[in-house]
Amino acid sequence: MESNYKLTLKVKRYDPDSGKSWVQDYGLEVGRILRFTDLFRKINNEMDPSLAWNSSCEHAQCGTCAVKVNGKPLLACELLVENAVGEFGTTVFEIEPITVAPVVRDLIVDLEQAYERVNEAKPYIIEPAENFDKGNEYQISPRDLERYVDATRCINCFCCATACISSQKGFLGPNAVMASIVRLMDPREEAKKERLETLYSEKGVYRCHTSKACSFVCPKEIDVAHFIALAKEGRFKPEENK
Ligand code: SF4
Ligand code: SF4
Image 1 (spheres, rainbow, N blue to C red):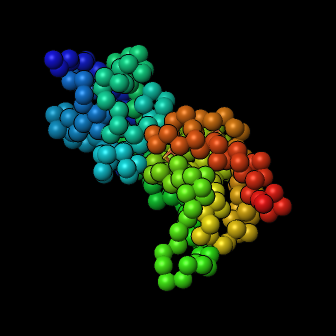
Image 2 (cartoon, protein in one colour):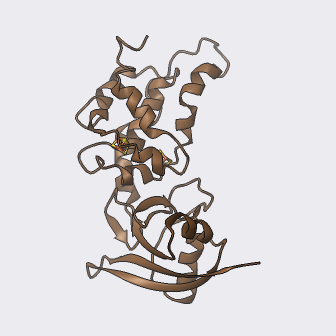
Image 3 (tube, rainbow, N blue to C red):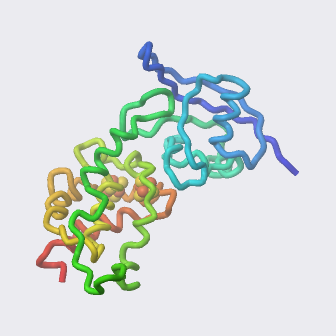
């Protein structure tokens, strides 16, 4: 049987035209298996069409619906009412935008600006290694792939970067750094030197305080801090990367 929950959503709002920022309360009576994106849509349809929020796939694959709920960055499309009440032990939820880039309006942040840090880490192959099996696709051994395949599940939702205490302090951020580490571990990448310079630069891994908040909040259950710890141990430095 469908249980109904009486929720209060306290949403942080921002109007770029007036520069005004405020918290708006919305009271909702909803079923247990609605997701938080459904709640935002319900507010738009039944109460307030002006509330602005972001989503695209709504299958936890694009990362655009990331928000903070009672301080925890997460994907709104993954959070069911029932689970939220259970996890946070309340029916009152403070909803805020993630904090990796300026707010455009209400819960929407400037993702282009957030992506600048990821782009700085060059999350692609800069210089492809020679394929020894000419004419065929480059095959990575299962042993090599196993070392970093978890990290390839990253969807750049920036939940980790929002939770990271070092993110605001000149650090490229956990997801950006991890994207570079993935390519360091990738046998198809030749441009190791350039990557190492970024990784151990002023903006690099030594900014990390090893709080592991990134791993704790990652909706893809990637142990981000593990990959950063490998780099901090110097595993990718040429003399130790045997
Ligand atoms: S590492 Fe996890 S939390 Fe961070 S951006 Fe990728 S998917 Fe999101
Ligand atoms: S472990 Fe490092 S990267 Fe992860 S949240 Fe903490 S300071 Fe940020």
